[in-house]
Structure formats: structure tokens, C-alpha cells
Amino acid sequence: MNPLIEDLSHILVTEKQIESRTKFLGRDISEFYRKRNIDEITAICITNGSIIFSADLLRKVYLHVKMDCIRVSSYRDETSPVTNPEIIDHIRLDIEGQHVLLIDDVLDTGKTINRITSLLRRQNPSSFHSCVLLDKKGRRKDPYEADFVGFKIPDEFVVGYGLDFAERYRNLPCIGVLKPELQNPPEWQ
Ligand code: 5GP
Ligand code: MG
Image 1: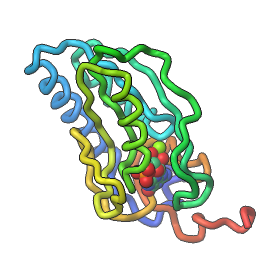
Image 2 (image 1 turned 135 degrees about the horizontal axis):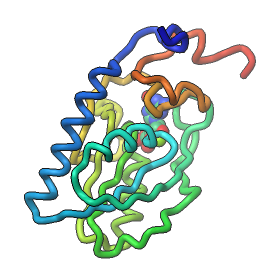
Image 3 (image 1 turned 135 degrees about the vertical axis):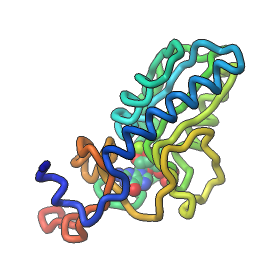
């Protein structure tokens, strides 16, 4: 038993569920493009949150995949947003004329993905689609529909499988909610 899992009050998505869903999503994405006679995509992963998901998902995609990352800051160590999303590291690949698939960990208020979507669309990709591991629909402030969604989840702050709390718990194999006493540890006050 992984002792880190004991820091969770409950698990929302198990390792097994993630495994089977990413496999299905990978096939879904591959078929979506193949039907349109597209055999290569450019995946843009929003770091750090989507790294683990992207690594698993893209290995289930049977298309040629170019990859790049974009880094945004919008959260500090708290469980709610403190600033508007700011792009810290931009992509290096030229996406003009490419079929872009943007990958993020969680679609929450929609601010981050809207910001990145309009920025990438300005670089004239041939097509633009998005895939998110988690969708918290009830929290949306800026309208956004992802083309591919792993799991719809309720409005709870989750960690694991790439998602952090103060940079911790990204390596948990499942997704869950931290025990309340760990969301505001005394050493941070
Ligand atoms: P949005 O801009 O849609 O409000 O927020 C998206 C970003 O906020 C995500 O990419 C993620 O980094 C962070 N975020 C939103 N909800 C959660 C959550 O429940 N847990 C964690 N760890 N990060 C979240
Ligand atoms: Mg993120």
C-alpha cells in the first residue's frame, strides 16, 4: 500500500479507472483524426499538471505525434486561484498548418484553457482541439467545451496523477481529495 494515499480523505478516480479511460481516449482521438485522413498531430501539454496524463495518453494514440509544452502560472500553494493565468514558457514548435491537440489536467473556471486556446489559434494551426483529463463543469466562468474529456468530477480540489497541492502529490497513481487538515498545514501560516 502506498502510504501517500492515506493523506486522501477520499478517492474520486482509481488507478484502474484512469488506465482504462486513457486507453479508450487514446483510441477515440486516433480514430477521430484518422477518419479525417490526418495521420499526424502536434500535442501541446500544459505543464506541469498534464505531464503524467499526456505521457500515458499519447502512448495510446496511434498517430504520429509531435510534442511541446506550455507553462502557465495561475495557482500558488492555495486551493483557489490567486491570479489570472500567466504564460511563463511558450512552445518552441511552429504550429502553423499543424493539427493541434491541447492537453490539460483539469478544466475548472476555464480561464487557463481559454487564454492558451486563443494564443495558439492565433498561430494558424490547420485544426485545433483539446483534451482534458478532468472537467469540473459546475465551476466554469469562461465558457469552454473540451473535445475530449477523461472524467467529469464535482467541484472539489483534487490531487494526484499530475495534479498537485503545493507541488506535492503529483505522483499519486489515483485522483482524490486531500484530508482537510492537510490542505492548510500550520507550517504555511
Ligand atoms: P482554470 O483556469 O480552468 O480555473 O484552472 C485550470 C488550472 O487550475 C488547471 O490546469 C490546474 O492547474 C488548476 N486546478 C484547477 N482545479 C484544480 C484542482 O482541483 N486541483 C489542482 N491540483 N489543480 C487545479
Ligand atoms: Mg494545470
